Length: 575
Image (cartoon, rainbow, N blue to C red):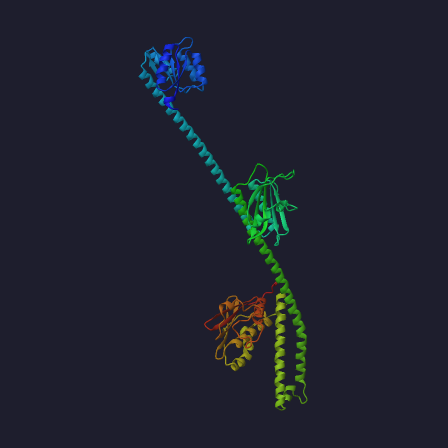
């Protein structure tokens, strides 16, 4: 509202006063309307509210006080400022004028300057009030908008926190599961519940992407159940291409199917190692849609689902490999057992023939003694027979080792325990090794504890263990080095150590020397014969008599230490 173009309603029953005031106001640029009585004034003011009213008090039928009071009762005129014009100058008249709703009071006869000044003042106040009202409405609108924004952001934050909890809940439930059926069920149930979806489907494909492997469906407020067919959505133009490119998209599809009248559809690919392995489908009816937060949640759930499915797949592959390895290992064991038995018979027959041949005599001498008395050609025959005899014994020992390992692993080797004095028994076992070490320029040192408790154990197993360790020590100890055999005792065990100097086993090899068929790579296979069964058999025998064995090697010295219980207790079950 511009003060110079303001609309002013002049109410006076005297035409002369109307003309005078109208002339003064019009010269100032105001738009002037006139009314000669109260009823006319009310109709004019209510139909086209002015910016200001000049109101005479003394009028017939309805005086100025009544007109002003009536104006303040009407919603469209109650805010219009009213200036009273009257010849009454008493204070009581002025108070009554203000009580009825007037904002100012001009006493007749009036001066033009005073009238214009008071009008200008009231119009300025009116304009300021209008501006203040507009500003207040603007502030209210801003407050309302701010409250709406805060409420929307609060709701969005609450929704984000809820989705974060949902993602963690799903991740925790599927992370430790290796059952892909359970993984898919949890995924569709949780997404349907949190997103208030009408339906959620999951589809998995095999590696060539041609056929579904498994498909699940969860209805809102119902548990997941198997869904018999793949939705026809993949046949829609462009759907396959977008999913294969890893794109998540939402679209609307109208259908006449009364059972599944879905419209808002969200498709999110499940990708593993950059390959499209399946799809999450969510459905909502009109007028629902999927917002950005919901789409991000589905994408994150799809990623967690892909990780869990990949773990499940790797576990299944690993289990299949373990089963296959067990099958192959069983086949190998069966083969070794069979071939050992098959080889043992002809080799045993060869040894028997050799023994018969060597025992055949004409003058009380064996065969080799008779041949040795002959010439140089016969000496070669003796050498050939001895080589044949040694190789035959070596093959029989090898076959026996294979059979012993099979028996021990199958738990078919019974314990036959006897009580011995370990020191006395060791001296008897070490007797042939004194000459052997001398021939190899090695030094045999025996350090036996002066007093040892009796040992009750399987003597055949203990003998095989000690002989194998001593043979290895003699085989691998260089000339002019030492082989030390020592005994000691603790409160519950007897310790037997065999240490040889001049050799050292690398730490990495120490972890594997007891494995079957394992040989230290640094050793010359042509210099040291064997197939790597000796120490493996030692460990099997040690376990069989409830003992333990450990190897230490450093500073050009290697030591094998046996820890044997005083009394061997028969185990109920052996693996």
